Image (tube, rainbow, N blue to C red; front, side):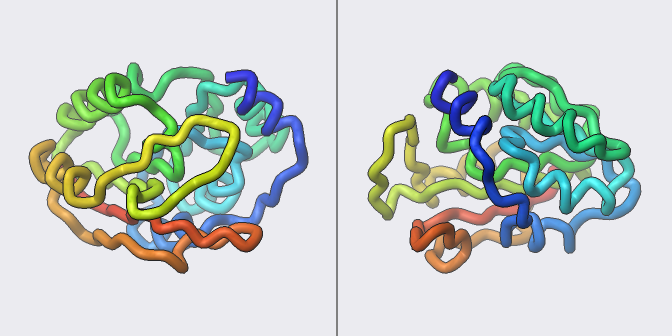
Amino acid sequence: MSYWNDFYKKKHTLTPSNFARMFSGFTSDSDLVIELGCGNGRDAIFLHSKVSQYFCLDYSREAISLIDSYGLENVEAVHGDMSKTNLDRYTAIYSRFSLHSIDEERQKSLFSNLSKCQPGTLLAIEARSDTGAFEGDHYRRFINNQEFHESMVSLGFDTLLHTEATGLSIYKGEDPPVIWYVGIKK
């Protein structure tokens, strides 16, 4: 966790991601959204005004402090573990670049919680695909696209959008293959 606390002490872009821009087309002003792994809040800053209430969850206390410092209306920042969070009260769940940051046991727990979501719950996940390489100094567990999609189907989500491609999440010259998934609970 010290890696992420140190990471969020540095200045980073607050420009919304392409994934957040895409996701905003699926949301409504009555949605109660939770973002799993909110990081520095770049997507929360963009999305919070488009929904009724926005919850930012992160395991890094530094990230939560950043969110609190923005003073955003209708946003609540919560320190916690996404794999242990009850998700059935939200109408939309948003996760960008956080699924590949947890190990398989925590993913299993998270998926168990997703299986308990209410019908009509919107789910949006962006994660690094296992078709690309990564060099870095922090943990990444790359996601197999086919296995991931099969998991979403088995959890009871109908697919609204699903792709694996480069060109979706370019950052400082990096263009990793990523999975974009949007589904709705049956």
